[in-house]
Length: 184
Length: 355
Image (tube, rainbow over all chains, first blue to last red; front, side):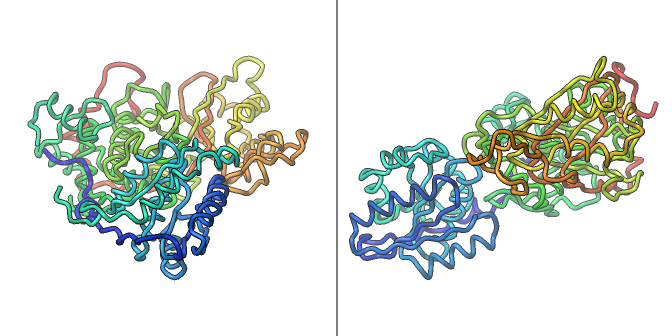
C-alpha cells in the first residue's frame, strides 16, 4: 500500500528551541505584532503589566505581516538584534495563528527564546502549525474570544495568571522533545 | 501498512487522517502504478511544496491520492495540472485552507478534454453524478490535505465549514456560450486544455424566469444576488446559464462585467475605502453613501455553465487566483483512452459530450 501523505523534512528533523532565560527582569522583551486588531491592545496591556513586574526590563515592538519568507527574515533579524526574549501576538484566526507560529519559529531560528500568544481554542492550531514548522514551539492561550478588541475584556484576560504562564514559557527549562532529542 | 481490504484500509487511513471521511480505494502498488501510466513524468518528480510542513508534492503523491479518490489513469494530466495550480503562490490555497472563512476550492476545466473525460458542464454542472467532476475535485482536495497536513480544528480553521470543500469542479459549457471561453479570454488557444483554480466562500443561485428574462433583468438579478460579504475580499465568479447567456448574446462579456461593477453596491458604512484587499468597517461613513462591491471589472469573472433553464449562480468572494494552468497530455494519450475511457461509460442522463 502506498502512503498518500507527502514527505516533509519537518517531520524528519526536529529543530531545538533555544535555551530559556533565568529571569525576565533587566532583559529586552520584544513584542512581535501581526497587525490583527487585537494585537495592539493585548500588547499594550501586557507591556503595562510586565513593566510593573519587571521594572528593569525594556520593551521593543515590531510589526510586519508574516506572509512570506522576506517578512520572516525581517522578524528574525529584528528579534536577534533588538530583543533577548520575544512574544508573538496574536493568533485568533486560522491564517493569523499560522502566521504567529511561523513568526515564533523565525524568532527561535534567530536564536531568541519566544512564545506565541493565541486566543481561546487556537492552541491546537498553533501546535500543529508549530509541529509542521519542525519545532515544538511554546505558546500560551490568552482567555479571550477570537478577534476581541474590547479593552475591558482584554484587561480582564491579561492578568497575573497569564503573566505567570508567559514567564514560565520563557524561563522553564526545555524538555527533551523541545531540545529535539526525544525519541518518537 | 494495512492490507488490500477496503474496510481495513479505509479505517486505518481514516484514523491517521489521510481521508476526507469518505471511503477510499486502497492505493495498492498495482493501482498506483496503473495510475502513473497516465503521465510521462517520473513518479519522484517534485511538483512543488505546500503548507508549513513544506510537504513535497510529487507525481506519485498525486497518483496515490488520485487512486484513493476513485480517479482513472486518464485523469492524471488534469490532476497534475491541478496540483501545479495548487502550488502556484498566487492561488493562495494554503491561506484559503486555513482561514476561518471556510473557502472552497473551485476548479474550472476548459478545452476539448472536458468532452473526452465527460466532465459535466451542462445540467447539474456543479452537482453530483459525474465521475470526472466528483473524483477530480475529491483527489485535489486529498492532495492538498495530505501534502499540507491540514485537518479541521488543527490548521484548517473554517468556522462554519463548507460542503463545497468536498468537490467543486465543473467544465465551462463551451458549446453553448455566445462568448469566447474562459481560457481563451486568458490567452490560451481554443483547442488547449486548461484547469483554473480559485477559492470561493459562497455559492448563491438566482432565477430569471418570467419578467426578469430580459437583458436588464438578467444582469440586475446577478447584481442583486452578489453576496454583500464580497467587500471582504476581491472578486467573484458569475456563472451564467446557457439560456440567459443566449439572451445576453448581443452584450459583450466585458459589458457584462462593467454592468456588474457599476451596479453592485453596498451601503457605505459596510466597508472602508475601495481598493483595500480586506476592508474594515468604517463607522464614520454615512448610511446613504454607497460603495461598489468590486474594485474593478477586472476582478469579475464570467463563465457559462449549466443546462436549460434560467438559473444563474455567483461564487465568491474569491481568495487567490484565478490561476490557470495548461493540461499537458502524455505521448500515448490515445492508447490510454482506449484502455481506460470505458470507466466513464454510462447509460443514463444527458448524452455523452460529443455524441
